[in-house]
Length: 352
Image 1: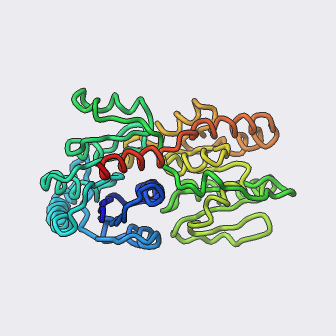
Image 2: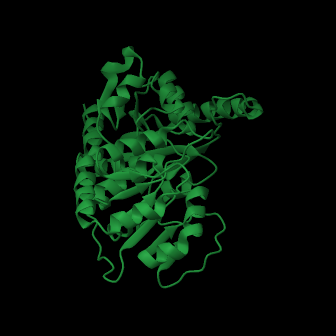
């Protein structure tokens, strides 16, 4: 039986693209295939992975920080523990390949796999690679990226390893369709799997005007939310299996600019209004992602404080031609099937 290990986690953006690859692998590999996942023992990783019918091993996870922080000292021991745990798991399971989708939890398994001579492949979803991917690239023999420009962030010695594929998206998004609301345009607000405080506050402060214009569906995240549902406003903590149809039913999506959300919306062909996460708590990857979508004509990026939200939405809802152009641009942006491309590459490697 062929065995493949996957690693990554922390957010749905590090997990769902890999699940798309796994789903595709199961359809193209003729031999019996076993897949297991090494992820964070705390948080959402286990629930998402297990729900997809994949075996899960949880390890300790220490966050990698660029700034000087006392927690770095504590997390060093978590990283060491994670490495030891990952090495034991990989020795026991002996996979033919370890595929990393990033996140801090992926570093110990990639280091352990390299030490055990297990091939490491990794994928970077964002325009510029995160610290975890930069570390994992040292262990990897293949580096997949969403954008060709991402290559410039790696050392010259890594260039021969890089393959540009786009971002993997689950097949449900490629076939998603839903009936639109005939009474009012639908605005879908997505803050990512963990929610988004700034985005939620923006919706709260503009809710009266938004519900005059739209039927609003709002993924709030797990944080406490005190706005009651009404005829034109529906708050949902987390949208999971229904996400493809929910996006397809929207006329406009208001969201952050995490890579997973952007590519899912683009695959369905939804025009986006983006409020990327920025400031001291981020390396600026969402701003880069957002500008890439805006340049492609699939999105409009709001001012950092979101103060122009209503004017942007009013202009869009009154410009059908603009919305249709953004729809076409989004579909073109996400035209390549990265999940299929990467799955075929993995098949070629493990079935040699």
